[in-house]
Length: 427
Ligand SMILES: Cc1ncc(COP(=O)(O)O)c(C=O)c1O
Image 1 (tube, rainbow, N blue to C red):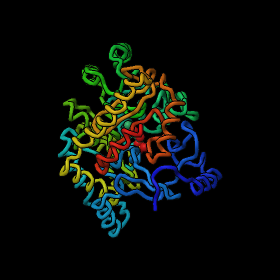
Image 2: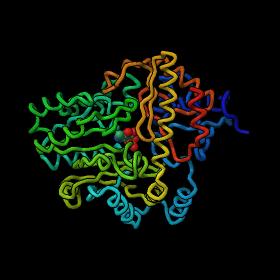
Image 3: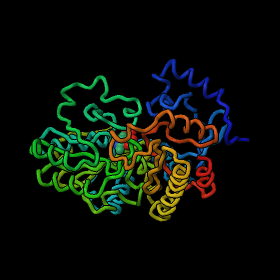
Image 4: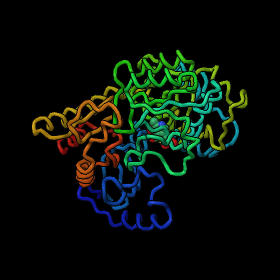
């Protein structure tokens, strides 16, 4: 019988030892390492609904959701069946397939401002393509980004980035040529006046402003009133493009993008995670006039052996159809609020330096009493040692959270009221 809590870890530990010999740090993505929380990473064997099961027969209620894609929980039956059916017909064609058209029509129906789009295999690829497109379209070089936002691991975007870089205290990666970073301008998230100054100085050189419209990679940080609107106005005023990186937020808060929810139309949008239903995917889309600059129509080159992969698209299409049909969003938001209310009222009663921020089915428990947390400078005041202690305690009790203070936890449609209540009580 799988146990919840008081976990064993002999098999995980031995796999980690073997992995470290051949895989740097034993992990295929640094955010999976437990470096900032202590202990060894857990090796997962399978997932089902709200649960993850590790190789040592421990059972966890999962609040990481593979870092966002698994909004329906693990191994949702209809998604698995769609993948099986697609795989039986061939894993990849390297040629056009019907699902590409279905996905494009589905996304265009949910987000009408995605007038045209291109499907790729990761969020990083989607962002790289969006930025090349922005530079190709405008004939300008500079990109404005925000500290604490993460947009994938392309060279020029690893400056002042969130996620694993923030967790590891890395301000910029080694191996990035100074020339690649030279055209990147960085402002504090939510700092409208800094953005105005940057535009006054460099406006005519800026190809694009890229932003996570709700930041999820320094923990959950919301855009303040007027921030995104100012980005829209300034970029339009200087003929720069506005790119909303919705790799996390796309289909996370409603069956559409955050830009569409807010009525702010970016020039380009990047998607990933949920639209692949747990399979590798990325999408870049937006105004047809800009998208038509992509090869083979235009001079901006982008390609991919596995782009528009039929199996990945089968998982994504089925996931989006279920999200549209079942609309789990109010329930996800209710559950995240329940956790936030429980954490915040306990913290107030006991005067603890901790609080929880929530938006839709996303939440972060920040170990600081500083409020509001507006940008990555604010976030750095969190007590990461206290977070690590909390993470380990919850892991032992059978809750799998993202192993860093600077990440967002996710609720899925498979979570039950009972689990949310138990988690809230256990906090
Ligand atoms: C906002 C955002 N953009 C881009 C990426 C990169 O996506 P991928 O890891 O699929 O390359 C991520 C990954 O977490 C992300 O959160």
